[in-house]
Amino acid sequence: MEIQKGRVVGMHYTLRNEEGEIIDTSEGREPLQFLQGYGNIIPGLESELEGKKLGDALDVVVEPENGYGVRHDQLIQKVPREAFQVDDLQVGMQFQAQTEQGPVPIRVVSIEGEEVTIDGNHELAGVRLHFAVSIESVREASEEELAHGHVH
Ligand code: ZN
Image (cartoon, rainbow, N blue to C red; front, side, top):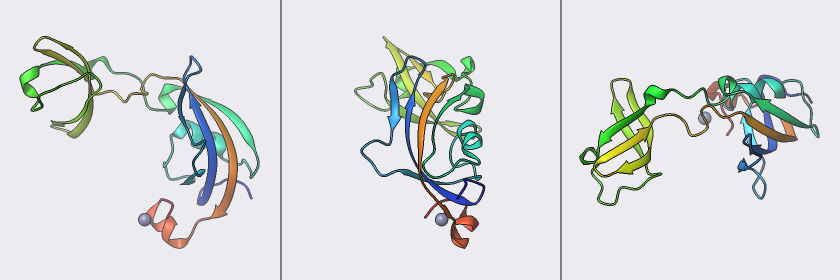
């Protein structure tokens, strides 16, 4: 059975960055299950999987535009430390910033004295993604899964 919109795919994957470091992998876990064609995985990977079959293994390179997006410098900002209501603020901490566009996840990327630099870019924004994928299962989705747009 081929992968196409409305089918549920189980896949093992390993995601590496441009330097070959593993960012994420399903190794040691159950295969990732997702409903093809509903934007449940990044578009650059979803489009490459279309038409593949059970047992196929493939390497996919996804450009940032089709992955987690490009980096936007304006999402990097300096804010006063007092804007955070935590005692032991540390680099790497994540928060939800309340903005006019709704809550946005941000990360603390540096702390210099009273000045804190935050980054609202996705951690993988601007990163060229290297996926190694193997297709472990393909099945028709249930009516309910199609109605919801995701796997149950
Ligand atoms: Zn549901």
